Picture 1: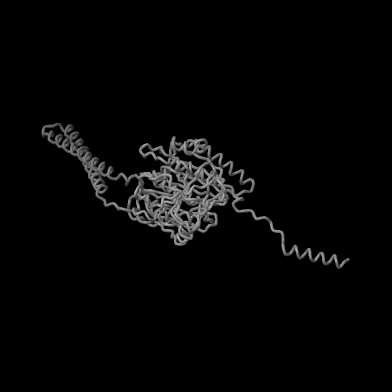
Picture 2: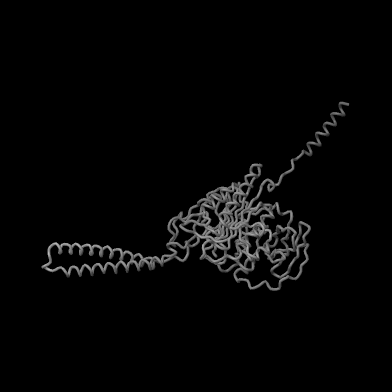
Length: 515
């Protein structure tokens, strides 16, 4: 009996040793809660700036994207009639892009984040801005409808106030580079001394990642064919999964920067290439985790590599990509609310995507003639977007160039011709008044005769001295003003700013070019 019990014990021990119980692994994504604050501003508080057409569309599409990823999302945008029709959910939720509403949204979002953190959940927040930007006195700012949102305000009252473990800032606006880096005093277009820029606020925060598209131009970065900003369309395309070159279900800062660079590499004119600055938070290059949304996905095999556009029945472009041969992709799919189509650009072939099952492969789809025979008269430059294939080698070979600084803000040197002509005018006015004083002194001197009483002669001589002194001062001021004005008008101006490298822990990534 004892022998039987011993044998049974050994067998039980052996089975347990061969198959030890393993705790069920919890996906990393399930331990992290995502939040997003999205702002789209078509009309700046500065009345002289042009009104954008698609910043509200960009904001609405970002709302849809982050909802696909399960993020608690707040939207500030004034949607036009067309955008409200295309995005009814955004129309139902959007708040005005003004300071009071921004404070309300930040307060609500910070409370959501605090609740998540109190339950031991890691938090990541996305702050997305599409609209107008500018720089004054070396400090960048973006526009709300009722006033500027300066770099310190964005850093302290928005990003810092959220209280998230990590924050990713995505901005498409002119001069957005200066939201994180200071120009310093002055602003003349000259060779940049070492250390001309310095990291401030957002760039100094270890838990903040930056993805900034900047432009030196006042024109909008929009294309009617996209009905969106060019940079925002490319970023969203990458975040749908097209930039996930290693197929791990996550998009890193390196991958998104390489994806945007590759998308625009075929554009001949640098003017139409976005100038991108990317810097991950310290300790992690991950920008977005797609795994929460990839349970419902479209798989595009590498053997089917080509230029594709994913759009809904209303013609809203959800994503665009050009996967290289052997580069397979997994793309997020929107909820089954209506027809979705994959359009292959090269041969104008369209693939209707069924509502189910959740996982659909391109190979299983049937090709049909494209619904729209003509795609419209597109801008010649932007037709080159996504003409080059993107794959792992694009990320592997991606280099982090130094970041070019945008041209100076319209300040002193931006208006130096006005100051120059003002100096010449001031000099001429000073010289004219000085001449009047000289002539007046001469008239008084001519009136001094030998028979003039001594007291009267002394008074006149004193007045002559005062007039001559005043004339001398005015001549000096006038001469200085004329000289300064001439220098302002005649001083040579550099055509371009040289590249300035920005050192930061975790490395600063940049894609050169300019709008």
